[in-house]
Length: 111
Image 1: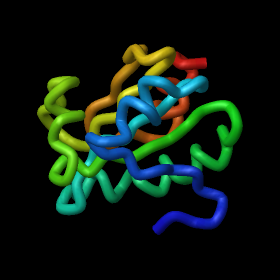
Image 2 (image 1 turned 45 degrees about the vertical axis):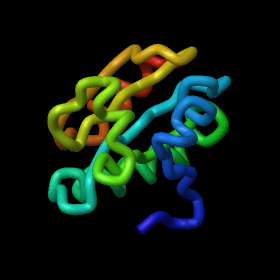
Image 3 (image 1 turned 180 degrees about the horizontal axis):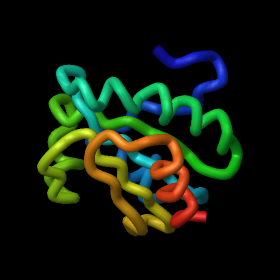
C-alpha cells in the first residue's frame, strides 16, 4: 500500500477533468484494476516515483472497473496503462508492466 511519502491520488470519472486535464503540472495517470497482477507489480514504482517527483509531477490512479469513462475516452484496452499528460494532452503512454527507468523516461516526456 502507499507509504507516507506517496502522492498518488485516486482519480475517478467525476474528478478526472479537474485533477488531470486542468492540472498545472504534468500528470502521470496509472490506469489499472485490482484483479491485475502486472498492475500490482508496478504500483510500488508509481508510488516511489510520486515521492521522487513531488512538486514537479502529479500522480493518480484510475480503477478501470470503478471509473470506465476514462479508459474508454483514451481507448485503453489493457492494463496497466500509464498515460503522461501535459496541459491536458497525452504526451506519452506505456502499456504493460515496465521497469522503473522506462516509467522515468515516460515522465520526462511531460517535463
